[in-house]
Length: 237
Image (cartoon, rainbow, N blue to C red):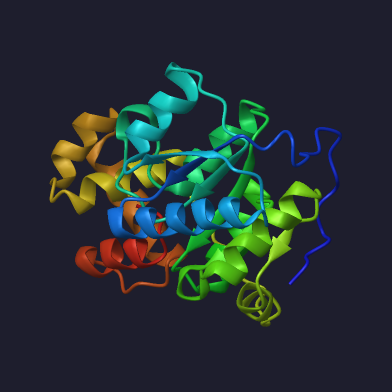
């Protein structure tokens, strides 16, 4: 699906400009599969030959992108990644937002197993990715097709993503960085009092924020485990 909702930028990639790709994905077999597809396409001439690096954690991706300042033309970005709380990175979405905020001249291709419409819409708004694929449909045809569209500055959203986004829904889910921190600490089994110490909050504030999260994520009040599981399902933590 050729999605034309994005505004074209002036820093359009060309085939000569495409030199490097970073795969941000915590499953090494998936990384190897994506890299093989890219390498074979380069040999066939359907895309330029490129160097590929892998980051199996947000920490490694952060080091490459911001500490070592390695330039990547395209980043393949998984959303459900282990958190890197030291840099307030709780998912691939946070990494994508940081790439956008720092105005790195790199294109983002999101590949996710998420199918929740609200989460996909939020990712669309915060990252504005140049490509958007559901993992279950990532094969040579879709992956190389996405890269080819990105090279022409034509965003590529798969048909599955399009169908999900066309579903009817008026609800919105937005979580602040503090709320993500709270969910992360809850997922580690940390008690409310200790969470207050971590976040410099009073116990009553912790409990109030938890009630707000239960409401936002549609979970019965008081069921912390269900709250954490729902956050994981949505790729928030």
